[in-house]
Length: 151
Image (cartoon, one colour):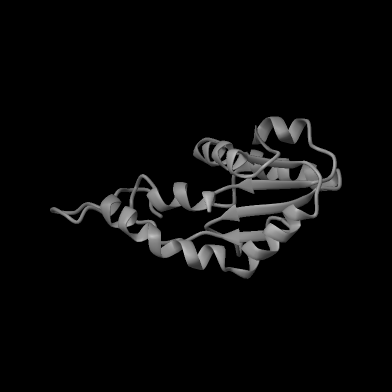
């Protein structure tokens, strides 16, 4: 990840390279011990809420369509009106979005199990489970960073 796009003279463009890398990222993400633990946590029952801000909220909306009974919420709103119990899945590419972390803490205070999906799983956030996504995205538009949380 960077603050500036990688400038290249010609193809392959960084975004094209990231799109082509996506199929190879599926197995490592889905077979990670954290992803397997997160899936088991979801099966334990209770309401499932997926939160994020900006493009992470877009991933939350898509994720809610992929998990039966899940609902997507804006992280800031979820921090002000946290759920009771169940599971809160927070999506934050950098593991530092204030509203997303606040939603996670508020849900945890109300008895929810918390899962963070991030490219920085080593960051201390207080999540019960941190599922890592690849930190290989050299495309300024974070192609992999926006698609991999859906896995």
